[in-house]
Every structure is written in C-alpha cells, then in structure tokens.
Length: 219
Image: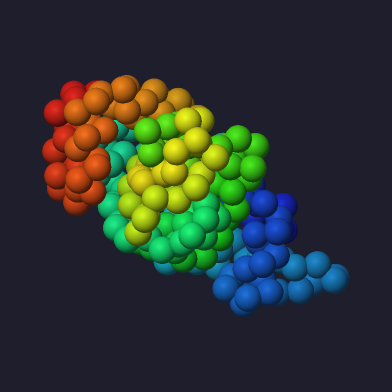
C-alpha cells in the first residue's frame, strides 16, 4: 500500500510542511510518482519504529495499547530535567530547550518547537513567579507518552509573563491527547500555588529530587 503526504500527516499528526521538510532533508523513505511524493506503508512503519514514535492507524486506532490517562507523577517520570539552557531571549531559550530534549525524536523536534512558538505567539505561557508552562495548542499524538520536561535557563529570561517578571524555570507540557493535557495542566497549576514548591524549584533541583517533590503532592 502506498501513502500520500496527506496520509502521512494524518498518521503522524504533523503539518504538511513537516513531511515536506523531511523529504527535502532525505530523512524519510519516499519516491516520486506522477509528480507527487508517495510512501510505502511498510517503509513508514519501519521508520516510525526506528524513531520510537506512535502512528495513528486508518481505523482510528493507535499502534499502542488503550489509553488510561497519565498522572502528574507519570508525566514527570516520562520527562527529564535540563539545566543551564543558554539564550538571551524567549525564542533562543525555547530552541535551546527543545534541542536538549532526549525524549523527543530528533526528526520531530522542529515540529515540537514550531507548535510551542505558535502557542507563545498567541499568548505567553509565563504564569508568573518566574514560571512558564510552554505547550502546544494541539496534542502531539506521535509521542509515546505524555510528559513534562523541566528546563532551567542559564539566567532568567524575559518572557512577557503575566507579572512581567523574567522566567527562571520552564515546565514543558507535551501531551499526546487533550484528555491528558487539561488534567495535567490543572495538577501542575496546583503545585504552582504552593509557596514551598516555588521556593523548592528556586534551588534548581535535579530529576530525582523534583520527582520526589511531585510525588509528595499525591496528585
């Protein structure tokens, strides 16, 4: 079975520009037929497996087991913590953060960055007190699981936050579905209302310490 660019957009959950970029860069197996690019389904399945990403099937089913939701602790477990992200402005820091994200397949990092930048262009995700929660306006269905990736800039960065203060920590909320996104955002927001938690993150904790703190909330 052969697939079109439209088919791939549906299966990966990305924009046509992303697939076209992969073709130009020679990153995805393709061939030309009648002036249009086509893809063999078996080649795409193998490519997706190497990338460690999910595919949406034509019958509406994913190639993973049934989705039972993701807790805040599970989201942090699936994520990571990165320190000393360089950048003098928001775009530079966002780019530096996404580049460091090992849980994101290399060929999908540009798509993640573009979606996050689109969300920031609509409204800053800087919620105040030096905290930002960058996220996409739409789910990222190609990820294996929803996750929260924590990044500490090398120095606080201007971010157009609600209180006008520069941001010193970014919690990237990367959800595979809307049913994950809203509960995770709500749970994370509850943590941000805890003064002791805000003091804790000022210490720029590592992944183990941060996860232990999140577990203490019991959310």
